[in-house]
Amino acid sequence: MREILGRRRRRRTRRAARSARLDAALTCATVWRWPLVPGVATATAGTRGERGRGCACPDPGCAVPGAHPFDPGLLAATTDERMVRWWWGNRPTAPLVLATGGRAPCALSLPAVAGARALAALDAGGLRVGPVVATPTRWSLLVAPYGLERLGELLHEKDWVPSSLRFHGEGGYLVLPPSEVGTGQVRWERSPRPGRQGVPWLPDVEVVLDALVEASTGAPGDGSRLAY
Image 1 (cartoon, rainbow, N blue to C red):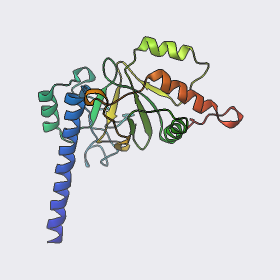
Image 2: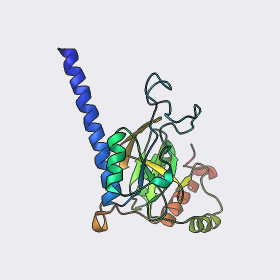
Image 3: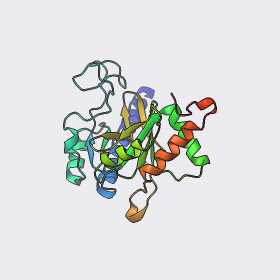
Image 4: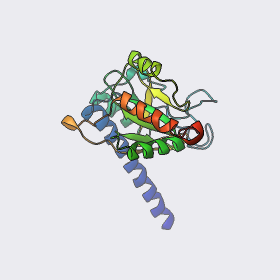
């Protein structure tokens, strides 16, 4: 009896997780108008190794297991409700992959330890931040959309930026919660806060970049607070 009850609880937990993922996908795509595509997901046990470690794509040495689009590709990202329902109805465990850039949010990401330090520094400086996505390995700060030309201008103005900083802009992507990828669970460190018309508020990339550079160069001995 105990074994039967355990199986039932696991089934209920899986159904709840699948429902939460579909609900999140519908909110992102149809309410916030953030274009999504399903991620490739992790390999199941007995195929490419232990669940949560391998990738379901054909590349056995995949550098971002489970955390990227495969079929369909990134260009298929959409805000169409019917498509989103069909994708996550057929692949309920697929990660939510946001196609960044254009009218969609962009992001700046750091290794997890540096990301936690950066967020603490931004809070201490009184800077208002937007949504923050956290995985066991990296934290990503979502910002308002920016183009590659503007990003190039901003970087050109800087004498130095943290080498650990990555930019997710036009043609890029970011995995959103609630998803599971090869490195573990994807979660909100800072949940989206509704702005105008219920769409999450996003800070300008220049403000966040300036604050990150200042926080990093403020370390004693010319070191970087945002190093790995």
